[in-house]
Image (cartoon, helix red, strand yellow):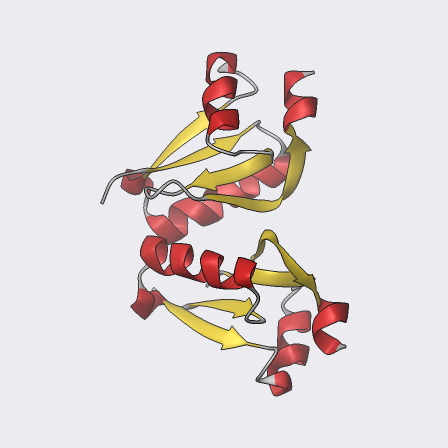
Amino acid sequence: MSKSIFYHAGCPVCISAEHDIINLVGEQNVELVNIGKDRTRITEAENAGVMSVPALVTPNGNTLHINFGASMADVKG
Amino acid sequence: MSKSIFYHAGCPVCISAEHDIINLVGEQNVELVNIGKDRTRITEAENAGVMSVPALVTPNGNTLHINFGASMADVKG
């Protein structure tokens, strides 16, 4: 199975969801990207359809928005 | 690992998320509950913190709201 990508911005909602996703999917199956810190990957996230974080982009390219931490506009500041 | 429970109401957003969750977590690790049909489980879902569907309640009791299909008020009608 190829990896999912979990985009977050370090917010409390994000961290909580990150732990849940790792428990569910397995740490080896998900790449964690903090787009609050690694801002070079914001465009990649937006191109994948990420409208808010936390969000999980699945191996088949679907984007699952999980709860609501912050809008992309807030992350970009 | 004990099972997660995926609550949905049969809406297109729900079905799409259901397929993604099954692919990610594995069909044997998640119970699928259509609270639009199986209305006896609406109270159980609400007690688990489900405010909208689709939602995934993890084995440790956290509720992940995924995208947005329908509010519990809409499901209850």
